Length: 144
Image (cartoon, rainbow, N blue to C red):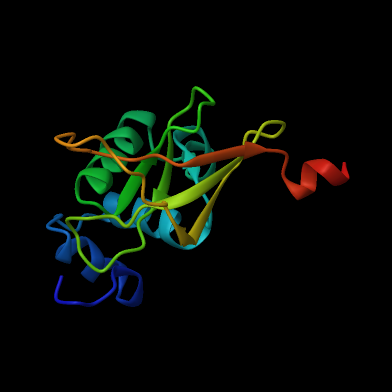
């Protein structure tokens, strides 16, 4: 992706630049996650937002968007896989950032401006992926 941030271009161009064939369903799902979910979402959230799209199509499309590095997976310990739109300039690498998970409402929030801190690793260890999730109680739940 020639140094153009995928969030600064059209929905169609983002899919095309990521190597995905632009179809009506992919475009519908990508628009939903790109413009409606400002934090992490689950397949159940997506299913509720797009009730006319069957679950298997949602699952396959989210998988394709994840494989194309337009979304990244978050294991927040809730038992439900969550996804977040990648904020990056390179379709091969999604910049790692910190996530917050509320232990009461189970929502997960992205702190896209806070990168995962560097961790000294033993010599010879090759990391493949890094998760950084801070668990606590969100402001909304604290006020309830």
